[in-house]
Length: 231
Image 1 (spheres, one colour):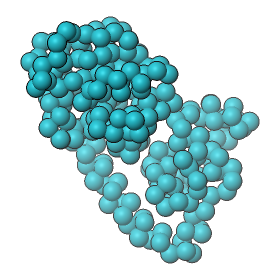
Image 2 (cartoon, rainbow, N blue to C red; image 1 turned 90 degrees about the horizontal axis):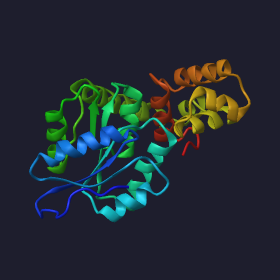
Image 3 (cartoon, one colour; image 1 turned 135 degrees about the horizontal axis):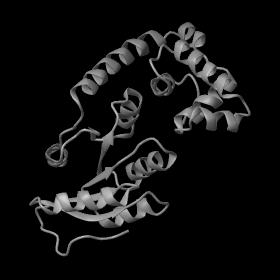
């Protein structure tokens, strides 16, 4: 991990960068150095000691370039436990509804797409620091729709007979636990000694069973209604 800068202005926003690509980290450091009020207190790639480094840096905002690996998900979860006041922003993301909803559940405060400009990155950092949440308009609309749908589903699922009809088998619970951990179909197949075709079929059936649009929304529905012990 490399520290950047010397003195830290008292009015600055203290930012920590986490990205696998070193060139990307260095580019963002140079971008923020040109902006008054934004101070990079540290930067690193993903590692086992990353959470500890961030906690010691005492930053206001952490910028992450991924939420698609077990390492990145674990980092966000650990930050929520060890540094709950530190906000997290994702950048360079795809417009992926499943990934976005997972990010919201994990407490992410900003979600910037790959085509975001340097000005938009700066504005997002400043906005999040002011207490705002940042995301593309279409994903914001998706979130509204998801919350509304969840409310209606929860209301309907409060009936014991309805809950029973949506119960999952032991194998389905195992599989969705691995989906919740961020494993790919190939990794799930290897873990459960199944074919990828079988895994895809299981996930497809579960999505229909809980009325979800994608695998990650299925995880959210299962968590919300406690149909299975997905962590």
